[in-house]
Image (cartoon, helix red, strand yellow):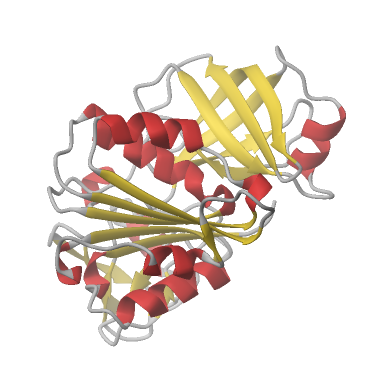
Length: 313
Protein backbone atom coordinates (compact mmCIF):
# COMPACT_ATOMS: atom_id res chain seq x y z
CA UNK A 1 0.00 0.00 0.00
CA UNK A 2 1.46 3.37 -1.09
CA UNK A 3 1.49 6.59 0.89
CA UNK A 4 0.29 9.52 -1.21
CA UNK A 5 1.15 13.08 -0.12
CA UNK A 6 -0.70 15.94 -1.82
CA UNK A 7 0.72 19.47 -1.53
CA UNK A 8 -1.78 22.22 -2.29
CA UNK A 9 -0.97 25.69 -3.65
CA UNK A 10 -1.35 27.27 -0.20
CA UNK A 11 1.32 24.90 1.24
CA UNK A 12 -1.26 22.67 2.95
CA UNK A 13 -0.29 18.98 2.87
CA UNK A 14 -2.40 15.83 3.28
CA UNK A 15 -1.36 12.18 3.27
CA UNK A 16 -3.48 9.10 2.62
CA UNK A 17 -3.04 5.48 1.60
CA UNK A 18 -3.72 4.03 -1.84
CA UNK A 19 -4.15 0.33 -2.63
CA UNK A 20 -2.17 -0.93 -5.62
CA UNK A 21 -5.34 -1.24 -7.74
CA UNK A 22 -6.66 2.25 -6.91
CA UNK A 23 -5.99 5.52 -8.67
CA UNK A 24 -4.85 8.46 -6.57
CA UNK A 25 -8.24 10.10 -7.19
CA UNK A 26 -10.12 7.01 -5.98
CA UNK A 27 -7.90 6.75 -2.92
CA UNK A 28 -8.44 10.43 -2.08
CA UNK A 29 -12.20 9.97 -2.30
CA UNK A 30 -12.03 6.96 -0.01
CA UNK A 31 -10.05 9.07 2.46
CA UNK A 32 -12.61 11.89 2.26
CA UNK A 33 -10.16 14.33 0.66
CA UNK A 34 -11.69 16.14 -2.36
CA UNK A 35 -9.39 16.72 -5.34
CA UNK A 36 -10.25 18.64 -8.51
CA UNK A 37 -11.43 16.36 -11.33
CA UNK A 38 -14.05 16.08 -14.05
CA UNK A 39 -13.98 13.44 -16.80
CA UNK A 40 -12.16 10.71 -14.79
CA UNK A 41 -10.71 9.36 -18.06
CA UNK A 42 -7.55 11.46 -18.49
CA UNK A 43 -8.91 13.69 -21.25
CA UNK A 44 -9.81 16.96 -19.50
CA UNK A 45 -6.61 17.08 -17.38
CA UNK A 46 -8.50 18.85 -14.56
CA UNK A 47 -6.99 16.39 -12.09
CA UNK A 48 -3.39 17.00 -13.21
CA UNK A 49 -0.66 17.39 -10.62
CA UNK A 50 3.15 17.44 -10.71
CA UNK A 51 5.58 14.93 -9.27
CA UNK A 52 8.75 15.80 -7.36
CA UNK A 53 10.60 15.63 -10.70
CA UNK A 54 8.01 18.01 -12.24
CA UNK A 55 6.40 15.28 -14.36
CA UNK A 56 2.70 15.78 -15.04
CA UNK A 57 0.52 13.16 -13.33
CA UNK A 58 -3.16 12.56 -14.12
CA UNK A 59 -4.54 11.58 -10.73
CA UNK A 60 -7.55 9.82 -12.26
CA UNK A 61 -5.19 7.40 -14.04
CA UNK A 62 -2.09 6.91 -11.87
CA UNK A 63 -2.10 3.80 -9.64
CA UNK A 64 0.91 4.29 -7.36
CA UNK A 65 2.97 1.21 -6.51
CA UNK A 66 5.20 3.10 -4.08
CA UNK A 67 5.07 6.23 -1.95
CA UNK A 68 4.55 9.36 -4.02
CA UNK A 69 4.38 13.13 -3.51
CA UNK A 70 2.21 15.27 -5.79
CA UNK A 71 1.80 19.05 -6.10
CA UNK A 72 -1.54 20.44 -7.28
CA UNK A 73 -2.07 24.05 -8.45
CA UNK A 74 -5.05 24.90 -6.25
CA UNK A 75 -6.05 25.27 -2.61
CA UNK A 76 -7.92 22.43 -0.94
CA UNK A 77 -10.70 24.78 0.15
CA UNK A 78 -11.33 25.82 -3.47
CA UNK A 79 -12.51 22.38 -4.63
CA UNK A 80 -16.24 22.87 -5.23
CA UNK A 81 -18.68 20.00 -5.66
CA UNK A 82 -20.35 20.05 -9.12
CA UNK A 83 -24.13 20.48 -9.13
CA UNK A 84 -26.87 20.25 -11.77
CA UNK A 85 -28.72 23.37 -12.93
CA UNK A 86 -31.27 24.26 -15.59
CA UNK A 87 -30.86 27.55 -17.43
CA UNK A 88 -32.99 29.64 -19.78
CA UNK A 89 -31.27 31.23 -22.76
CA UNK A 90 -31.68 35.01 -22.58
CA UNK A 91 -29.51 36.05 -25.54
CA UNK A 92 -27.87 34.32 -28.47
CA UNK A 93 -25.81 35.76 -31.32
CA UNK A 94 -23.19 34.76 -33.86
CA UNK A 95 -20.49 37.36 -33.28
CA UNK A 96 -18.41 36.20 -36.24
CA UNK A 97 -18.14 33.13 -38.46
CA UNK A 98 -16.12 31.54 -35.68
CA UNK A 99 -17.68 32.63 -32.36
CA UNK A 100 -21.11 32.36 -30.71
CA UNK A 101 -22.15 34.40 -27.67
CA UNK A 102 -24.65 32.71 -25.34
CA UNK A 103 -26.22 34.24 -22.24
CA UNK A 104 -28.53 32.45 -19.84
CA UNK A 105 -30.21 32.82 -16.49
CA UNK A 106 -30.08 29.91 -14.07
CA UNK A 107 -32.95 28.40 -12.14
CA UNK A 108 -30.79 28.65 -9.01
CA UNK A 109 -27.44 30.46 -8.64
CA UNK A 110 -24.24 28.51 -9.28
CA UNK A 111 -21.20 29.15 -7.10
CA UNK A 112 -17.95 29.07 -9.06
CA UNK A 113 -14.47 30.53 -9.11
CA UNK A 114 -13.50 32.92 -11.92
CA UNK A 115 -11.84 30.77 -14.58
CA UNK A 116 -13.84 27.58 -13.99
CA UNK A 117 -16.15 25.88 -16.46
CA UNK A 118 -19.40 23.91 -16.66
CA UNK A 119 -20.68 21.12 -18.88
CA UNK A 120 -23.53 22.23 -21.15
CA UNK A 121 -26.22 19.98 -22.64
CA UNK A 122 -28.72 21.14 -25.31
CA UNK A 123 -32.44 20.40 -24.83
CA UNK A 124 -33.31 16.72 -25.04
CA UNK A 125 -29.70 15.53 -24.98
CA UNK A 126 -27.53 13.92 -22.32
CA UNK A 127 -24.32 14.73 -24.20
CA UNK A 128 -22.20 17.41 -22.54
CA UNK A 129 -19.47 19.81 -23.64
CA UNK A 130 -17.28 22.04 -21.49
CA UNK A 131 -17.37 25.84 -21.61
CA UNK A 132 -15.94 28.45 -19.26
CA UNK A 133 -18.03 31.23 -17.78
CA UNK A 134 -17.06 34.69 -19.02
CA UNK A 135 -18.97 36.56 -16.30
CA UNK A 136 -18.04 37.36 -12.71
CA UNK A 137 -19.44 34.83 -10.20
CA UNK A 138 -21.85 37.28 -8.61
CA UNK A 139 -23.46 38.18 -11.93
CA UNK A 140 -27.08 37.05 -12.39
CA UNK A 141 -26.46 36.31 -16.07
CA UNK A 142 -24.08 33.54 -17.12
CA UNK A 143 -22.18 34.22 -20.34
CA UNK A 144 -20.32 31.88 -22.68
CA UNK A 145 -18.26 32.40 -25.82
CA UNK A 146 -18.38 29.26 -27.92
CA UNK A 147 -16.26 28.43 -30.93
CA UNK A 148 -18.43 27.77 -34.00
CA UNK A 149 -17.38 24.40 -35.40
CA UNK A 150 -18.53 22.71 -38.65
CA UNK A 151 -20.06 19.94 -36.52
CA UNK A 152 -20.45 19.14 -32.85
CA UNK A 153 -23.29 18.65 -30.38
CA UNK A 154 -23.32 22.29 -29.22
CA UNK A 155 -22.38 23.92 -32.54
CA UNK A 156 -25.07 21.94 -34.37
CA UNK A 157 -27.67 22.98 -31.79
CA UNK A 158 -26.71 26.67 -31.88
CA UNK A 159 -26.71 26.74 -35.66
CA UNK A 160 -29.91 24.77 -36.30
CA UNK A 161 -32.49 25.29 -33.58
CA UNK A 162 -31.30 27.29 -30.55
CA UNK A 163 -33.44 30.28 -29.58
CA UNK A 164 -34.06 32.63 -26.68
CA UNK A 165 -36.25 30.91 -24.11
CA UNK A 166 -34.79 27.43 -24.61
CA UNK A 167 -33.99 25.48 -21.45
CA UNK A 168 -30.51 23.94 -21.40
CA UNK A 169 -28.72 21.93 -18.70
CA UNK A 170 -25.50 22.76 -16.86
CA UNK A 171 -23.32 20.70 -14.54
CA UNK A 172 -20.49 22.29 -12.63
CA UNK A 173 -18.38 24.01 -11.67
CA UNK A 174 -15.26 22.12 -12.67
CA UNK A 175 -11.64 22.97 -13.25
CA UNK A 176 -8.50 23.81 -11.30
CA UNK A 177 -7.89 26.96 -13.36
CA UNK A 178 -9.03 29.93 -11.31
CA UNK A 179 -7.93 33.35 -10.10
CA UNK A 180 -5.70 33.07 -7.03
CA UNK A 181 -6.15 35.75 -4.37
CA UNK A 182 -2.74 37.40 -4.43
CA UNK A 183 -1.89 41.08 -4.73
CA UNK A 184 0.79 40.44 -7.37
CA UNK A 185 0.57 42.03 -10.84
CA UNK A 186 -1.07 39.76 -13.42
CA UNK A 187 -0.35 38.63 -16.96
CA UNK A 188 -3.20 36.97 -18.85
CA UNK A 189 -2.60 35.10 -22.10
CA UNK A 190 -5.55 33.90 -24.19
CA UNK A 191 -6.09 32.27 -27.55
CA UNK A 192 -9.44 32.32 -29.34
CA UNK A 193 -12.39 31.58 -27.05
CA UNK A 194 -9.84 31.00 -24.27
CA UNK A 195 -10.49 34.67 -23.56
CA UNK A 196 -13.79 33.72 -21.87
CA UNK A 197 -12.42 32.61 -18.47
CA UNK A 198 -9.91 35.47 -18.60
CA UNK A 199 -12.81 37.94 -18.90
CA UNK A 200 -14.32 36.38 -15.79
CA UNK A 201 -11.04 36.88 -13.90
CA UNK A 202 -10.65 40.45 -15.14
CA UNK A 203 -14.20 41.26 -14.10
CA UNK A 204 -13.47 40.09 -10.56
CA UNK A 205 -10.29 42.15 -10.39
CA UNK A 206 -12.33 45.14 -11.55
CA UNK A 207 -14.90 44.52 -8.81
CA UNK A 208 -12.08 44.34 -6.26
CA UNK A 209 -10.59 47.63 -7.50
CA UNK A 210 -7.31 45.83 -8.13
CA UNK A 211 -4.55 48.46 -8.13
CA UNK A 212 -1.58 46.52 -9.55
CA UNK A 213 -0.55 46.22 -13.19
CA UNK A 214 -2.62 43.92 -15.39
CA UNK A 215 -1.43 42.77 -18.82
CA UNK A 216 -3.29 40.84 -21.50
CA UNK A 217 -1.92 39.14 -24.62
CA UNK A 218 -4.74 37.85 -26.83
CA UNK A 219 -4.29 35.99 -30.10
CA UNK A 220 -6.70 34.85 -32.81
CA UNK A 221 -6.22 33.25 -36.20
CA UNK A 222 -8.61 35.60 -38.02
CA UNK A 223 -9.07 39.20 -36.84
CA UNK A 224 -12.83 38.88 -37.42
CA UNK A 225 -13.01 36.32 -34.58
CA UNK A 226 -11.58 38.65 -31.93
CA UNK A 227 -14.23 39.51 -29.35
CA UNK A 228 -14.51 41.24 -26.00
CA UNK A 229 -13.19 44.61 -27.22
CA UNK A 230 -15.96 46.59 -25.52
CA UNK A 231 -15.57 44.69 -22.24
CA UNK A 232 -11.81 45.21 -22.25
CA UNK A 233 -12.26 48.90 -23.03
CA UNK A 234 -14.66 49.30 -20.09
CA UNK A 235 -12.36 47.40 -17.73
CA UNK A 236 -9.33 49.48 -18.71
CA UNK A 237 -11.07 52.71 -17.66
CA UNK A 238 -10.88 51.79 -13.96
CA UNK A 239 -7.93 49.39 -13.93
CA UNK A 240 -4.31 49.53 -15.05
CA UNK A 241 -4.91 47.14 -17.97
CA UNK A 242 -2.55 46.98 -20.95
CA UNK A 243 -3.92 44.74 -23.71
CA UNK A 244 -2.25 43.62 -26.94
CA UNK A 245 -4.19 41.68 -29.59
CA UNK A 246 -2.58 39.70 -32.41
CA UNK A 247 -4.15 38.13 -35.50
CA UNK A 248 -2.47 35.88 -38.04
CA UNK A 249 -4.84 37.00 -40.81
CA UNK A 250 -6.41 40.45 -41.04
CA UNK A 251 -7.44 43.07 -43.52
CA UNK A 252 -6.38 46.66 -43.96
CA UNK A 253 -7.10 48.93 -41.05
CA UNK A 254 -6.18 46.33 -38.42
CA UNK A 255 -4.67 48.21 -35.49
CA UNK A 256 -3.40 45.19 -33.59
CA UNK A 257 -0.27 43.07 -33.96
CA UNK A 258 0.28 40.73 -36.88
CA UNK A 259 1.07 37.18 -35.81
CA UNK A 260 0.37 34.85 -32.91
CA UNK A 261 -0.18 35.38 -29.21
CA UNK A 262 3.62 35.21 -28.78
CA UNK A 263 3.86 38.30 -30.96
CA UNK A 264 1.28 39.99 -28.73
CA UNK A 265 3.42 39.08 -25.70
CA UNK A 266 6.51 40.52 -27.35
CA UNK A 267 4.67 43.80 -27.88
CA UNK A 268 4.13 44.31 -24.14
CA UNK A 269 6.53 46.43 -22.08
CA UNK A 270 6.40 45.18 -18.51
CA UNK A 271 6.91 47.62 -15.64
CA UNK A 272 7.80 44.84 -13.17
CA UNK A 273 10.44 42.08 -13.15
CA UNK A 274 9.14 38.90 -14.78
CA UNK A 275 9.42 36.85 -11.59
CA UNK A 276 6.94 39.17 -9.82
CA UNK A 277 3.96 38.38 -12.06
CA UNK A 278 1.24 35.76 -11.71
CA UNK A 279 0.49 34.34 -15.17
CA UNK A 280 -2.76 32.79 -16.43
CA UNK A 281 -2.91 31.08 -19.84
CA UNK A 282 -5.96 29.64 -21.61
CA UNK A 283 -6.32 28.37 -25.16
CA UNK A 284 -5.53 25.43 -27.45
CA UNK A 285 -2.56 23.30 -26.45
CA UNK A 286 -0.11 24.50 -29.16
CA UNK A 287 -0.75 28.10 -28.11
CA UNK A 288 -0.35 27.31 -24.41
CA UNK A 289 2.91 25.47 -25.04
CA UNK A 290 4.26 28.32 -27.21
CA UNK A 291 3.38 30.89 -24.53
CA UNK A 292 4.98 28.83 -21.76
CA UNK A 293 8.15 28.45 -23.84
CA UNK A 294 8.27 32.23 -24.35
CA UNK A 295 7.79 32.83 -20.62
CA UNK A 296 10.42 30.27 -19.61
CA UNK A 297 13.01 32.05 -21.71
CA UNK A 298 12.35 35.39 -20.05
CA UNK A 299 12.58 34.67 -16.35
CA UNK A 300 8.92 34.15 -15.45
CA UNK A 301 8.47 31.89 -12.42
CA UNK A 302 7.10 28.48 -13.46
CA UNK A 303 5.49 28.12 -10.01
CA UNK A 304 3.33 31.17 -10.75
CA UNK A 305 2.08 30.08 -14.18
CA UNK A 306 -1.45 28.63 -14.26
CA UNK A 307 -2.86 27.26 -17.47
CA UNK A 308 -5.91 25.60 -19.01
CA UNK A 309 -5.93 23.87 -22.39
CA UNK A 310 -9.06 23.03 -24.31
CA UNK A 311 -10.16 20.86 -27.19
CA UNK A 312 -12.71 21.73 -29.92
CA UNK A 313 -16.23 20.70 -28.84
